[in-house]
Image (cartoon, rainbow, N blue to C red):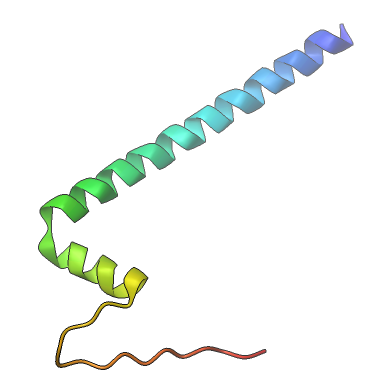
Length: 66
């Protein structure tokens, strides 16, 4: 009886985890499609994540010290 209850709880946890990952996959799929189709989004992504810049720009990194 106790083992059945544990297994039931485990199944429900796994179902919730599955739902979470499916939602994350869908978000990533939409973001990928946006990057492939929208040039401005691609530029923004490159600037934020790879610190890319235009020729006439300077980048300043602000690092907060604790």
